[in-house]
Image (cartoon, rainbow over all chains, first blue to last red; front, side, top):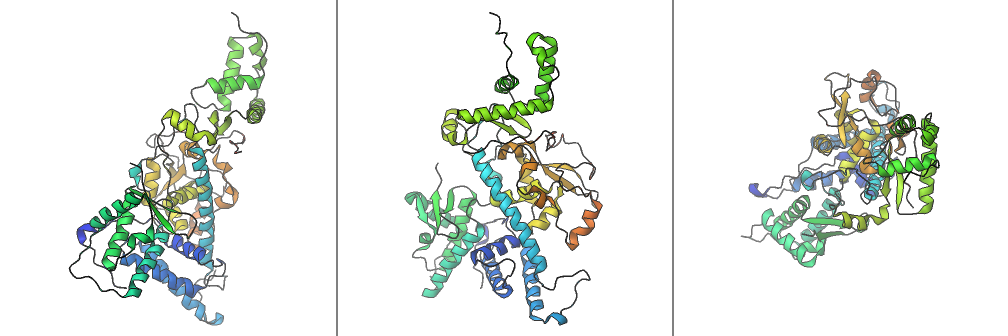
Length: 247
Length: 245
């Protein structure tokens, strides 16, 4: 997938705080895979697809994503070899399954994700609790700890389906029309504010140019980061909804 | 008018103390108060001159249960090792409006996950956090320190002497926890998974898996800079945190 040229001055610098393990767990969950018996070929293909999308969007990809891509390829190739032909990587490698180390890592991380959910529940409850003389934690808006509620991979998935739909229609690039992220920020913001609530996919209705779609998507990410709009999903892997943030 | 000379029950005294105090009270503070008043005021207060922490905790448990049964819209809670009355979370919207409190700010998932790793595995180095998360946590850790949910608790003895991180008292308050030990599954998750990479480093550190503080494993450093000199866990017995309905 060739990348779209986004004009330099409008490049959105978005730090992605999710890493390769987050992406893998997302794919495992989305595809309802058995974490203890991961179909390595399927997951590697999907992983690489997402990596490609992230490149297309010019998102800041951490080096660890590339390392994981290499790791997945290595595991895949090891699994293709018959057991007795597999080179010993380590004397201590008691496990014959080349996926074992990765699975161990994923299982452990997943436990912490569950712990994080527990903390989130406590946080939600505690914000409605007041006590005499206790100091609340003031989390200012501009701390930028990441995209709330709807995850980055959910957004990329939605972006991917919009992109695929356009490609199916085979519309050519409209000559002369340049789209910038800044323009699309304006367009998106007024669209969301006008309707107060908007389906993510309807934002892209009628768009035929890839550049327009990419810039609009980046505009959405930027608006989320700046807390000008919020994103929700009525359930995991459901339709994404954009909401305007009260003034 | 002289005060009613009948002896209040211990739990009633404690209830009054917690009610009237400007800040949450710990068991030791309450005991100190009882002992000092026994000495200075005498009379019926002398009954409590030899009160033990266990007596206080028992009385607090009873008080907590009484308050719960009365269903009056607030609870006796133990947060970060100290006791205070807290409003029922269901009444949040009304209180928020009355107090003109700000809209709540919530942590993102990556921040919560990083925080969970630190909370369960503390004291922990940045590298060890990243081993679990699979990606850099630089920015997130910095921000968590800025909002005082995380602090530096010492330095590892490993080469490079990396900083060790742990959670703060504010962390317990923010999530309504009495103690880090009360995190679910703490024994299982606190245990460091042995993989090739971390084997060498964990051999250098102590084998003590469930203590949340850094006793003897690493050099304690002055925490004035971090602005929070409280230790994370306390030795007070685990009393129930505010139970939801």
